[in-house]
Each structure stands twice: as structure tokens, then as C-alpha cells.
Image (tube, rainbow, N blue to C red; front, side):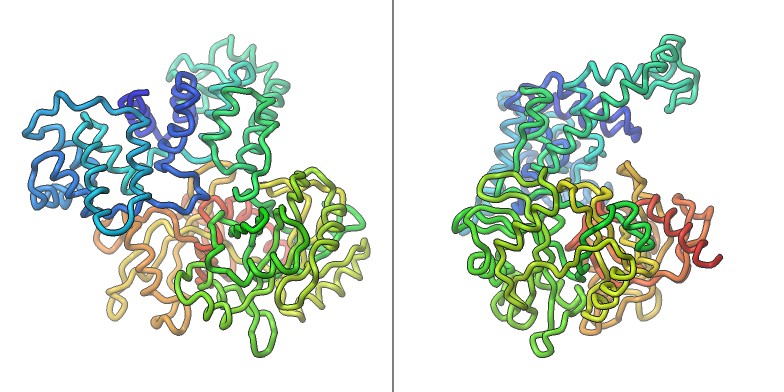
Length: 615
């Protein structure tokens, strides 16, 4: 496939903010994409060359790209930097300068998707002496052959700045539209006025105008068709949750259809999206959801750790699918020494404890271990963790996600040799008594945990989903995990820091972020005292996409936990809500991505909950 065809798709995706239009453009493109090109295409439209769980990065600095543009265009680096300062977009600079380059390159080979993809992947393989020059050659080779907008998108991909708006929801839906058209055509129609592909209804959701009589007539059959369509979406989502790679899923859908999606299996060494919990306000509500009796477990204040083992090889992944095997050699040792079996995947929570008092400590006390690259052994001794195993997904080649939870729990208890402050099976009881659960809750709090998890005994394990199979019970107004989408430079002694942060929650079921207020309290002025303004400023600076006076807009990547006194209705922010007296509790970026932050539905639920508490 020619790279120019993919660039045309980029232009279409860039031309609209409408989710359905983006889905349509991408699905039409996938229909004509050959099976061998599907995986590279799916990664490239996300601005990636590796799946999200793969820790390899291109790691190319702006200055190296400036040099590559210099080599490809013949324009002096100083002139390139001057243009870059004017526009703020090195991709646009590359396009304009290479388009008008002095030396003709009519003989240059036409770029293909495979060539671009292969060159970019090679960038990660180059290390040691001379690697910078070889990286320069690989980039310059692509830019020299690039025509028109090709240079813009190659540059943006290399720098991680593609931003064409293809989130997980759009990718999933586009795969359905491309490869299951019969299920889709019963649910969506073409608007005669704005030509958008829209759900069947009386009026177009895009332009508001009345749809045709044919569309309305078809709408009568929508309910059954919608069920069929949703089943397809569920199959795609389930396959993705097991692989975390839409490229693999799209290829399966194209070549094997729905049957192929159902055959997608767990692969040890490839992280799986963990099952997530809903929240319960009362024990009674929790039991109504999960049934009686239920298993009640300690809810630990640690971080999720998905443990994979295949004979001597061990992989450890966080909830965000980050590979942290290197940072936790102690956990690798515990798995090899205290867990029976050569091939398995365990779900667990790693909890920090004080080596002197042996008591559990809050997550923020050990969070630095996740990013630690050096002095690993020393850090493990100073900030030890206990692994609390609470589920098993695969054992000796058998996928256990479809087995009832009680069976999975029984297997864990046989496999894990409880070794306090190293690796243990999570503390739990099975009961249907609210009074017994309340007593167990008090014990859990006294032991330094956050509360309880209540689990449905006959439930399967559903990767990546928040389902009613397990619930969190804390008994307090919970904090919110929100994304920083903008910030303001401080004044006075804080003038050197970004010290006020605009926060956003996620629009439920969509990739859109909705502002819900700003926060400037809870941070420290010195790093040794806790999360500091200086530290957050360092995190935000590389993410700045626009600056106007003191206000900067940033690429949403940093996730912080925020406490507040109250949630109020507010016309000021797009969410329709504002946080009263918010304060920053901790940085959760190592644990959670943008897809994990609280949604507007969470905010609405908490708003209703606080009204009940006041009544």
C-alpha cells in the first residue's frame, strides 16, 4: 500500500471532530487494506509503531528531526528552527521546506506503508556508538522520498504528535463497520442533507435535519438490529481486551470473521486488560448486585500487578500494561519460589509496607518503585512490597477466564504458598450476612487497607470491563482521578512553576474530555515534602501544545487524584459540574491512563450520593 493513501486518510480524520465521520473514513480505508498491511495501518493511525503495552519507544528528539529535515531539504538548521519557532509545528515545517527543496528528487522511490513502518521500527533497534547517525539516515531517507503532506505526518509520528483523533472507541467501531457490514447497515443510514453516516432515527444526530422516509421505516427494525450490532462490538472488544492490539483484532476480523474473534486466546507474556470494579455505597447495595453469599476481600492501597510466567521467563505488568519486571526482582523471586506451576497468569495487588513496623503504607510511599531504573536492589530493600494474589486467568495452557470465580479462588489457594510480607492469597471471607461484612470491614480498615471488595462467586473474569462481578466498598465520598488538560503559570515566588491545573473527566463511552474545574492546592514547594509544583511542571512542559499568556494547554496524559469538599452544578465548565475546594492528593499517571479516569457518570452518581447524605 502506498503511504500517500494513508496520508489521505490522515487528512480526512484531521478534517472533522465528529466521531461518526472519523469512524466512517477509517472503516472505508480498512475495507480496501490488504491483510498484510492491516496491523501496520492500525498502529500508524494511532501514531504508534508498537502496541500500547510494548515499552519500546522511538525516542527521537526534536533536534535530530531538525537535522534530518536539513539533510532532506538542504535548508540550514538555523532556518528550520526559525520556521519552527513561528509555527510551533515541526511537521508543518517539514512539509513546507521539503516541498520546496532545492535538489529535485524525482528519482526517489515512492514511499509505502511498509517502508515507513519498517524504518520507524528500526529506530528502536539502534544503540551504541554511531546509532545517532544511523537514526538520522533512516529519518532523512523517509523525508527525502516524502511528497507533500507525507513529510508532515512522518514527522508528527516520529515525535509522537500525530493527534488525528482515533481513540479506542473509533477503532473498535471502524473494525465493525469495515468487516461486518450486514450488521451495521441495519443500524446506520446516510443522511441526505449532510451526508453523514448516522444512527437510524427521526432526525440526523449531526445536522439535526429530518431523515428520509426510508431511514425512518428502517428504524422500526432497529432494536433487533442493534442487538446484533452490539454483539459484534462485544466480540471485537473482548478480542482486544485479551490482546491489547487492535491490529491483531482487525486482521482476525478481516480474515476469519466473528468466528476468528472468538478464537482469540490469552497469550502468556502479552498483558491483558484487568477486570475493573464498580463502586457500592452500602453493603446492602453490594449484595443486591453480586448476590448472597459473596466473597469479601481486603481492598489494598497498592497497585495492580498482573504476573505472567512461562517456565523460567516472568513478566510483570501494571494496570496500565506497563512492563515493570525489571523494577521488581523481589516479586519475580516470590513467583518462582512460592507459586506452583510453570505457566500461569495471576492478578494481584502489590502493597508497600514499612520494613521496620511491618505495617502497610499508602501507595504514594512506594509509587517511585514503578519508574525506578537504577539501584533496584537497594530500593526493593527500602520500599518492599507484599503481593496479594486474588485471581488467576490462565494455568498450564488453560484459559480460566470463563470459569466461575469460586473455582479460580480454590485454585489460587492450592498454588500460592502464603509467605507473609512476600506473597499471599488476599484475606477474604465468604458470607451473606451484612453484620459480618461490617465487622470484616472494620478489621480491614484497622489493618491499614482502604476497605473491601465484594465479589460474585459464580462470575467469570471479564478483562477490561467494569461489571457487577466485583464492587468496591469504602464508606466515604471517594476521590476522583482526573486528567490535567491545561495549566497556568504562577505568580510571585511560584512564577517559575505551572501551579494551577485545569481538570477534566471523561465523557462516558466517548473519547472526549469534559472540564470540571481547576485545582492549585495540595502540592508542596519542595520535592522532599511530597508531590511538588516543580515535579508537576516538569511532567507538563513536554506536553504543552499551545501557550497564550500565562495559560498553557497540554496533551492530556497526567492523571491526578483529587479530593474535594463538594460537587456543585456549574455552567462554567463543559461537564456541567465543578469541584468545591479541590486539592491534589497524588499523581496516578503511573497507574492510570486517560481511559481510566473518572467519567461524567461517576461525577453524576457522586453528586446524587452527596445529596442523599445531606438529606
